[in-house]
Length: 189
Length: 251
Image 1 (cartoon, rainbow over the protein chains, first blue to last red):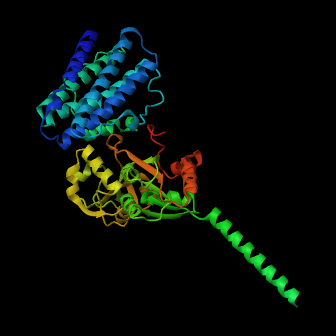
Image 2 (tube, rainbow over the protein chains, first blue to last red; image 1 turned 180 degrees about the vertical axis):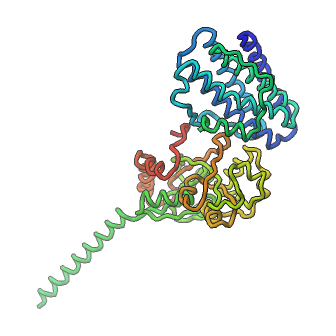
Image 3 (cartoon, each protein chain N blue to C red; image 1 turned 135 degrees about the vertical axis):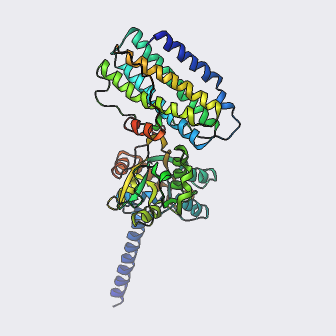
């Protein structure tokens, strides 16, 4: 993972989040769009928690630690963007207090364990965003989900690089909400 | 003779006064509170304190009864909406959150529709039982379905019930293929139904609130009862029954 590329792409999502074009839609939000947003906020809060615990575990320093910090920031910004989408649609966005996140006892015991945990958390979210970007109706939401998918792909690459691995999946699998939800059920509590 | 009559009369008067005094004292100390509580609290409240007088039902129905002057001392609701409306109207004191819960999908043990996941509700022909929209569990059910993008399955509803116990009963008796109830209600009929979990990200915020009814003639005892319910002992009883701890924001 090229750290500079990761930081530039995260900054891109930040800029998109600030502009928030998806809030401008006049059309009623569909059930599917709300479902992806609800799941997305919840999973991003989980990702934020993962990064926070990974940082607290003190298994990484220097640039690697910076990668984790940037990931935590990106997850917070993603959760905020999707939460704004929900609130804009008249819904209540999930918050951190709604969850009791659960990780295996040894999930942060070593650098390798952190990488494994991170990929396990981020991978289903990427798959769900890929599907969302193709299936939601509102064009601005499609752009949002595509941006989120790109960011997640880079975070997974960044996470894998923490252990010196270079992961370059040519075609990461898109998954539907049911599969993504099932994959994260154990973590979301 | 006259003396004996006088002594007898005094003795009778003293005895009568004593009985009356004892009776009055007993009424003050042991008069049960009248507690109006959400149907989902039936088992836990009866187990927790058998000495009070309970009226269980849908929180919206109990709210209406209190609005119409029902002689309740305490109101425990499965949704903040009902207690807050009464509070705004000056009919109850300030409500407090005392526990929380989760929704689950239950199917009869025989599972005639072959449901394995909540998403199967969309894929399979199903006779779905839910509570009415004004009932807290009915409103929570609709929140779950909307959060999961499954609102269309409401077209498969065959029966809208007046409270969560009615939903539980219908599914347990096999009169419906599936129904949404609280996790604690499912527990009460665990030998008759199978539970299908609803993901954490789709859970509604189920918050139970409790308040002293403003017109209660026994406010001190009502306040004390609520205080005990909020204490470690009360919270342990709720957890034992499967309720969740006080939400972080409320604790």
